[in-house]
Length: 259
Image 1 (cartoon, rainbow, N blue to C red):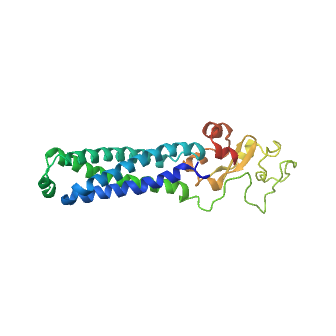
Image 2 (image 1 turned 90 degrees about the vertical axis):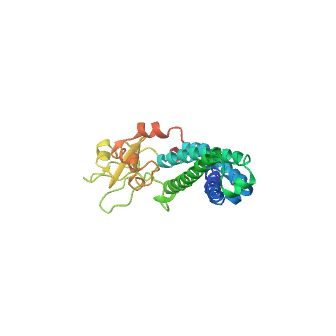
């Protein structure tokens, strides 16, 4: 944490700026040979800095996932981007070292030795790949945070009011109506006589998704599209006692257990 903020969202800004910037600089010096002697070392330095930022983003992201859950698509793209950027930094470094062995005339004309040409071509290909992967990683990360959760509330044990369905409190007696009672407005353990697994099982799809966790009954309907791991993670819990599944996934995580 830095100033009360998670480190990952801060570190990742360095990666998303330095990786494309270094890659674009490498592409420019590749296609403009007369600029290589002056600007290739600078472009390489930017790329190496971007690679280090990608590594830092990877490890801080894994730590952050332990608190909020793991967005699998973002992790997959992030791992690919980190590996590709490290390879890009290595290729650019080799190209820079090869450049020092060429004469000024060879640098200006672009007639470099074969080893330098191979290193340059590998750098160009990796620069394009690293840029695309950085974009995909950033997009998937933003999507997991903002794509379907902007303005959404955290799921609670309450449910939308119903004109036809009574809403008993945790200590009230069972409803005599044939309709199913709504989940409690309290986050404390509910009276077992009010909520039965049979009643919870009636709410087992995406249109009305209830689940029991540690004796509490939760309406998860609005949370189905907001889970970073995808709809299936919540839909699998609908209409069930989800205590075991919840504890297996989140028992050591801070945020889900405090909500």
